[in-house]
Amino acid sequence: MPEEKLFFEDASEGDEAPELSLEVTRTHIVKYAGAGGDFNPIHTDEAFAKAVGLPSVFAMGLMQGGYLARMLTDWLGVGNLKRYKIRFTGQVWPGETITCRGRITRRRSADGENLVDCELAVVNQDGQSKIVGEATAVLPSRG
Amino acid sequence: MPEEKLFFEDASEGDEAPELSLEVTRTHIVKYAGAGGDFNPIHTDEAFAKAVGLPSVFAMGLMQGGYLARMLTDWLGVGNLKRYKIRFTGQVWPGETITCRGRITRRRSADGENLVDCELAVVNQDGQSKIVGEATAVLPSRG
Image 1 (cartoon, chains in turn yellow, green):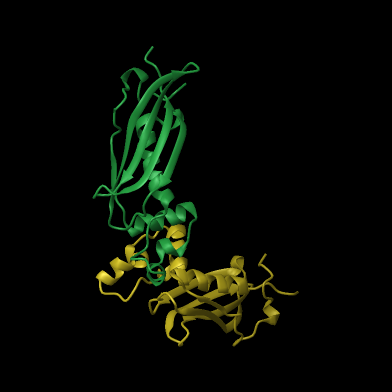
Image 2 (image 1 turned 180 degrees about the vertical axis):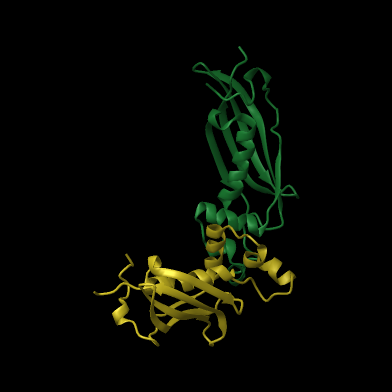
């Protein structure tokens, strides 16, 4: 049975998810390194990052992919997700504030399931794209 | 029963432990942050460390305390340790090579146990002191 995060009857095409915003710090990246096991120095060793020509360390793409997924599952329910697909469009640098967004693009029924298709985005404080994505969820019915 | 790392009969005052040396990197510090839960940005956020007047991030004292303990337990056996006491004498900076050392200062029997007292040290490649410490271990007998 789908999680009761959002009922199909209450979902309309064009509806937007509650946004999730976060100012990314080097400490977030360090915590994600330990949690995810990605110790590539490009993400957490400032001297290394500068030595290879970068302005600073930058976040792992899957870190902001994780924040986007949190926004999505807070909105629609993790148990309701059928598909989650993302593409990285820009690096996230410490000090940037990222905002995770979702919008229902299609509301439909198929094979006895009530579905919503969504477009997803992560942008920074200047509106620069960091991730574009899409998801499909099955929603519970009030009936 | 004590671990058979070193027999009491084979231990003499003045004997030295096999050294443990390591070049400390920012990635070691990041891994230790995740393992130990110390996310103080002074250890892993280069920009923060410089903003507060430091030349760079530096290692948590307990990190080199952990390396010293590894040297010690590789030598005498973790189950044989009765006492381990350390004092931090200097910060460890990325790029330094630290060496962990131990030496038996006293060999004695007390209350039916065969004991060794040891002095411990962590120094960098220039001999600068980072940790001084002491330990007591009970050693197994060949008898």
